[in-house]
Length: 130
Length: 250
Image (cartoon, rainbow over all chains, first blue to last red; front, side, top):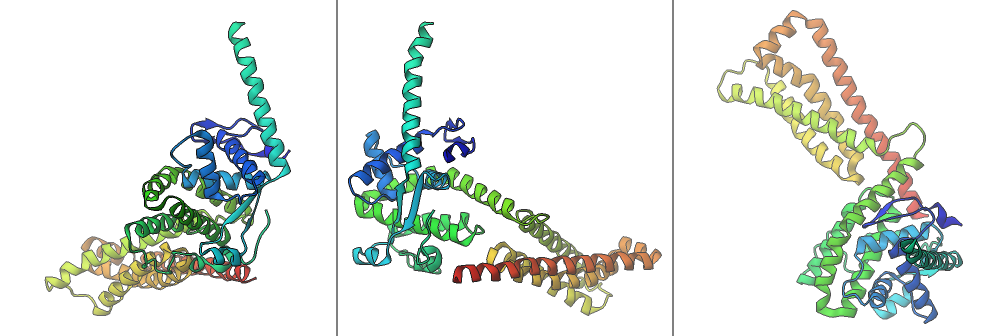
């Protein structure tokens, strides 16, 4: 899987483990899948807003953090992006949006990450008792 | 990732809403804040591949517009905090992109080192010019300058050109021109400035007088190295820029 090739790096306070997604990437993929399912456009601000709503947080993800993560997920093939048609943006009187789509690989990666987290959480109490 | 040729990367920064070529139309406090955010984005993307730079600024411009449309005047505080909190990530992203450019460069080339080396060489040249002018100016003012006046003129013009070239070299799109100006400045400051300082300084003058052939050879070698070095840098950047424009035009 391509996302396993994502390099190990520091993202905020969380350090990437090989083949795993950091929390912001999980949030982006989760929010993106939700927006897609609702038939809404998936773009930077919509993702930031949905992530904040899901976490019940007041602050939106910082610009640099969000777009760096979006670029990383796109490079890994978990997201695809294209620029919206100019005519649509013109009709709405706003700048063009960069529209994202969570790919099949993105959905698989998210499911795998959530399953790994559930397994870790389930193992944690057992380890504490051992 | 799919690509749209009519995307902002192809249109250029001027096509992005809220942006003027000179950034002078941001008037309200909210507009000024958005201008600062976009100005920061233009700064940290200044020497990245054009497509990546334009896409990043355009995406940020869209984000700012969407947040203001969604939250109204309350958006300013959130935008300010999102901007400030994201700065480390912006710089990390920039560093990663520069690493990517360096890795993709042909073997034996050092694209990341060239701008830094050029700036260091320009700073050395300006420093040399300041030293020469600093030594000769008091003698001229005090009426004790006995050297040729064309040396003084060549040194002064050389220093002015060196400063202009060094400033031009800081802007990625004008590096080739800056290097060209620095090549001329290098000739004036190294060839004529060394004679001026030998005239102004008793110590340097007596050393040059004792070893005239060797001193002349050193000055000539430094002059040739300086002129060819800066001319080479001008060539380094000029063709790359043409290729870049051709790619954008396609």
